[in-house]
Length: 463
Image (cartoon, rainbow, N blue to C red; front, side):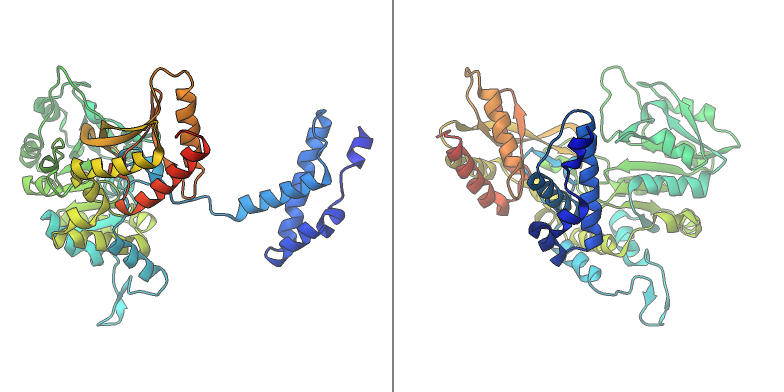
């Protein structure tokens, strides 16, 4: 065994190899030496287990590959052809060009984030978008933090710590990634009081649970699931009426946060932020990077008296939004103020695209993909925990052929090759077919899709 170890090159020998020396023009010698030692240790472990035996050339190439993997960005732009418009694994909402420009401007420059340029005194970052949010939602005040879970945590910590918050048992949900509303609430120090059952909750259940320790009544919109069959839910109007009699606020966690009427696009009705405030909710919480179509953010709108307490709480500093995302959010909100959201914000552009246009684009893709490609009817989903069960009609590019045993392998192979493109193209597989949906692809990305399909299908002899 010792003789096998002796065949391993030394660190000094490897560092003097020309291919390694070239790396020192761009990277620190100490980093390269560290990677060499790590690779040699891997080789020793393999040799000790009876495996291994890499040549010096192979070790050198492994070191070079490890260096490239270390310094190259892990985040890469991809083309989303899955038909899921707010795909959580792919980064959710795309930003408008205006929002991207605004974020670039402040990221490369100093800005008046917390400076009043008139008085030359310190100000607060939330004032930059508060007026916009109040105008759009009809609220008295607003504050923005880094995501919606943080918004709920902050409000409960500031307003309900060591007190009780009453929630329907059917709304005590998991919001994805293992994060559960009850756990978020417990972290705030508030006590969650669940009433009713999973499928049926009545206003009397809330009324009976109210006590001198109650800080608020809370509604949590079931944005990522639906309960059907024998059900009963308390309406927001009922909850607010009871809360007013008991002199308590209602907290309304809307999740996705929607400003336009989704029914106008053939989708199910999604509660509007403005409706929540108009009906009298004390606070409403929603995300910036879902149906709003902006960068990741958690937004709280509502009564000034409650918001003032939130803004003064020490936790606000820990969860506040940064200048780059704040700039993108302001630009996104401005689209709504200017009544141009449907034409400028990508998520709404995608939702509003007519099927006739999708048909034309899918047909162009099919022509590039060859004889095993066809255009078929399909459905797109909004995704991102928004509008579950609600779909939009679309036209899909389907590659494959029924009745051929290898079609499933063909679809998987082609899907894998598309993901290895630059930029990667991500589709979905259904049965023996690879499906690509133009609704979730920006029209300006079509030329990349066409070229990739033409090249790949030709190489795989699908034509």
